[in-house]
Length: 322
Image (cartoon, rainbow, N blue to C red):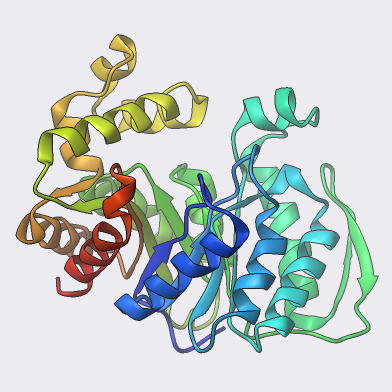
């Protein structure tokens, strides 16, 4: 397990950016103080695993992370090969983030299957981590299987994180992974839902778990146009509310009325994002940290293209100052 855990990273959004624009945005994040560059995989965007190698070759020192690669997007052996290759290209700077993803994407968009999340993730994660950590794997499962000896050898220091807010997968992450990635959550979710299930998983490890990452992926904006930016995030959150997993998360977080209305309330927008002046952004970061978060993957909300770089920088700096 990696012993130098990153603390504040930046999500490098591909939207409306060329490949060179993505690299330039990544450099801006590093200059602002981010220690990790996160790429999110959307089904209608470039393959993030390939773009991650480009980021690795155009940066130094900073960690490179996938947040997240859905398990239905590639077989576990291929996922492990991909991770090991990116880690080698980046000279040991890669963090693999895995997740079950969304049913509608796995089944309708990609035409694949969506197995039961917890048991399927156990098989998938076991295959991936065995191959990464030992260079060999021999697993026969109900949903996923894999048998191989990797010629280039193991990468035992390559961290594997799991993206989830589901109780069973959280416990599994605590048991088998090096960290979790949380998205669309509140500080109360981290304290009352995430941490107890992680502790249950940690209790099953049977050995010193070392330092475990609790990553909150958070949309944020240090802004003086508060109403416009909160409305922009409301539209983004409303889009995610169409996804089954997100609806379940919001209901469990106490926003069932929002789900039924199909529109996020002001309370939901405030609780799930960090939008305000620099002081307000810092207060939200402190609330998540006190709840149990150890690391942030900040996605700066840039609603005005001409001020994009300034907004990106000021938002990251506000989080770093918290």
